[in-house]
Length: 379
Image (cartoon, rainbow, N blue to C red):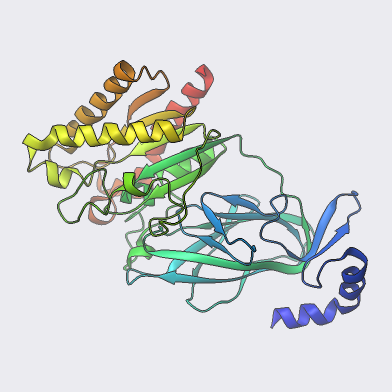
């Protein structure tokens, strides 16, 4: 195993550094040629300068593990060596396994399905002896799987991660935002979805923004035809994950944009209960009020329009416009917008069960990117 060979190869240096730096053989500090702090062989999970977290990641109090549940959540390190590993495991429901994608210097390097057994996972191999930025992001959604990371290590040196993202965007959505069905050649639920090639992640990457995604397939603002009121994004939007009711996030004053793309599942109920549609609008407005309290300075964008059947887009336009106008008139909110995104129509734009394919997501991302670029220029 790699861990044993690494320990044997670095035994002398590890013992010296253990006593001279006060660290452990598995996690040691040293000084590089550039006179900056580095870590050799293993980097502590809670060392924010060296392990950059993305999205909502839960760290236990002793930093013995980091749990990653939400779409596009993960971590990034800067590493110089021939092999980079992580000690991790996946957990999942019957719908499929947990998938992660590994990006090296911004390019997709590998996609890995994680087993239930905790084990070392090879993230990256290199022979060029150069430092590389390695980013690991969760591809599958929170309600179907989680990833637990126990250690990040390799046969080289870790350097401080250079922060390059210029803003932060939070997304609240359903299967569309999760990427459900954008990989139609797959057969299990988590294999069908790539949450890293959606309108949300594509536009955010173009904006050079970190994303925080809270989204679950089939969930609603109020209710859908097939589930109870428990499956509501407004109920869990401040939680670390849909199933961690004991862990809540603090008021967020750093997020620049909040994108809400919900209502598609609500439509399955309200298309048959049009006399109750005002109830949906009221529930949506209440969610907006909660978001505004949680994100006091963010620009809130109420989005709709990607999927369509029946009168879905027209009804969502009616609801979103009503919430927007009420926020402006009653709440005097000048930091809110409503946005219609591209609606998929052709076979190439549609994946599994009417969901947008990657091409459909790319076209919707163009609309979102154009809006964010213009909005950023006017702020």
